[in-house]
Length: 404
Image (cartoon, rainbow, N blue to C red; front, side, top):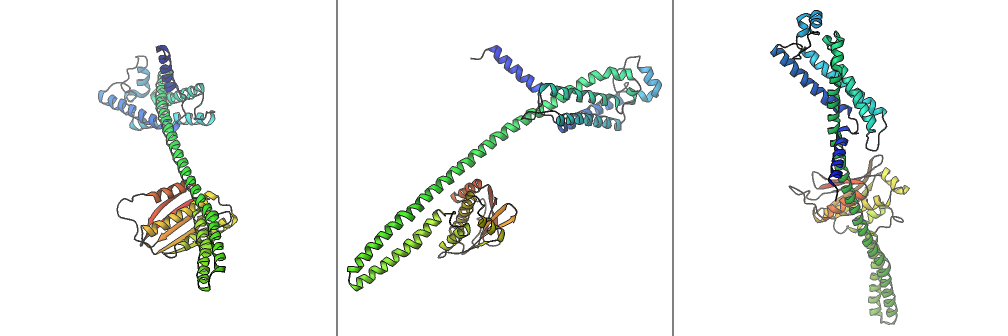
């Protein structure tokens, strides 16, 4: 177990780290908060001095300073600050502090978290405090300008108070920034985990589809070919009427083998190495011919992208799977009779897939996201894209945007 002395040392070190940094420098934050703090202080002192009729904004001055002030300015030298001077003093002081911190932030070498070394960090705060203290005492303060000894006596405590204020603001801003960075890192890690899981899901799905497609292409086609050959052999020994029936069955088996099985195999796992995305989408559209009309169009830039072969395989599969799922939704849920699939490049480096139908549109109220939406989410995440439903006058349109 950790000893009490070790615990106290660790807690003490944490307190020092929080108070003395080093934290990243926050010039804008420090200048803004300092301005409001000084403005409140100046207004408070000014109002108290006016209503209490005390000397020099309620600060009791040593007797040796009073004649010099009264002699130079008369009774006005003992009146509270003018409101313009109250605001101007706060503004000039806070801007001077922010400028010093900004200069140090640009010059100092920082670590991966944006923090300088502790010595340079404290030097930056110290210089900012001294500059701020000088502005606080001398800028827009004619009484103090006329009394150098009085100004010199107030520089040190004023600089110390300014240093404490700057340190507190820096520490709070740094702590909040670190907590925000930690929460962002956690959220980013969770998002990366989800994306990785989505990639694993779609990869497993593609492996299963590829296995079935290979089984159809190799085993089923081979078996059908063997059966056709056996039937042809039997046809040679059969009577003419039976031979004609066998030949018809052989012709149907050949059609199923060469067309249906091959088409199903390509739809399950398009071979984009030998078949382009445009061809694969057209095969997909033709497979729905008996149920609804599906039209596929590509604009010239997207055609050039596909013909050049520069598009990554993940992108090609993602576009195909999203279009496949959108057509399925249009038929199953939208009861559409027509679907238009369009690939365009509205801007350089952007590929837009649009699947519009003439069905009954989106349901009223909240949309229940099902397995189809999860598939679209996963493929868009894998291909660095995003998608949305767009209601139209009739039906609905799915738009998926990918970076290419």
